[in-house]
Image (cartoon, rainbow, N blue to C red; front, side, top):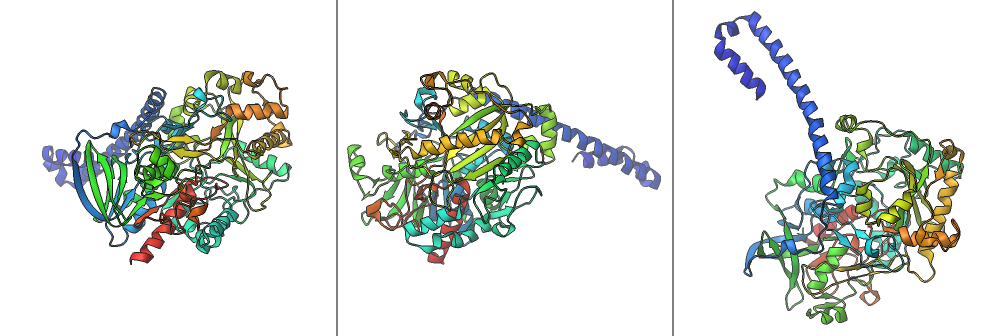
Length: 639
């Protein structure tokens, strides 16, 4: 528009000049210079704009008041209005729901997606490094665990924050972006539990590959090409360029006999450079990948700001309608074919129990009419871990200004193009006897203390200060127990749908202390890594001073580390099994192998809550697979 205006303005004032070839040529040259000048200014404005976005996001996060309930969605009127009927109503446009909405609307079905949050904006969360600001924003529900007695003891009120994404794309809006499927063996276990071979790794691999658009951007990173997809909607790459800490991490692992490999490939075990869901250095969430490009489909409606309070199940035990609020009004929407609950491992069981599907005694104690007695929320499995296990070193600090980092980011590379500096990951088996399943994950990073990190993770000031010792820039390690044996629960606080549920992960509580032993062995492995020639080359030294809460134990003794882990434990935010899949409802299964709720017609659950055992890795990519798989199952039934 600027060029067009300048061109017409010039013609209007100087018509004679325009008629001559000479001046016409001069005009073109002048306009070219003008265009290039403006382009340069606009490029500079983009950096300045993003600088303001980043600074505002950090400031807003530090001042954010985390909600304690969903009262913002309460209606302002008691009248219930009918909403238009749809073939399929998907509750939750998160990680899995976005995939299902995209795939079902490829056909001639009408699809309604009810999502409490909004679409991702193009601001801070698109920058991978700004992930933690999403934890302290309206893109996070703001859940917390109930006070724990065996873990989270260094957190405020002994409660671990429980980040869950609120928005189209779910937790992929604000997580660490790690593209990880888990081991092949875990899916073979799922298939045995469900008594359905379609859940074996051999049979679900095609769904992983279907959604993936893999970009081999780091030739130094180990990749097993056969196991990746190259034409899907979900972009996957490595951070570019790679940095020295990752090379040191791979070298240190090799020096301990741990090979470098593609954790999503043939072999699970070894060290790798994280594959992350980004495109040209920008975050890719499932809403942006699977929903936004298809919003022009006339048969797809995504209704944001919609909070579901109940699934109405009729006398024939058919899920018939969804009751929800939107902009202060109560609506009732009828599903002609099915209702698909994809609200996640916390909200899916919450909605089921509010709808009368859940443990009979629990529902009756809250005055909720029981529709179907199922063990919803009875098994809550999540991975405990710890982060910021710190070492000082002579590793050089990054001296780039924010402006310089943003200039690189706009070109698709640099520090801002991943959630953390380091991207080294090791998957190990240190205790669990099953040879195909990893039980420990170690993630390497370069980090510095910050109020944002402390607040987002819910640590007390004294705990955080002792963790960091006298350190500033540190080589840090995060540990996660992947094959957790501790069993928690998710229960309703009341029959009020706007009350948050009671989340009790019950971390590090298993009778045989297997979970805490796995993490303890992880600590021993980290010290072995620190003592390799690779890491000795940067003079790594453990910096955390003895925790005062563990002063009764000799520093670095096993008893001390057990105490340490109970103090600084955090969630990996990978909960599963609250609506567990299985062949036998008498053994706690809530859904069958096609994710249909036992005893209720026209209702499925499709998200991480159906996975009957913890993934020995991260959950977002398995959720994509679940979405792809169940979409095919539904299409086969109705087409």
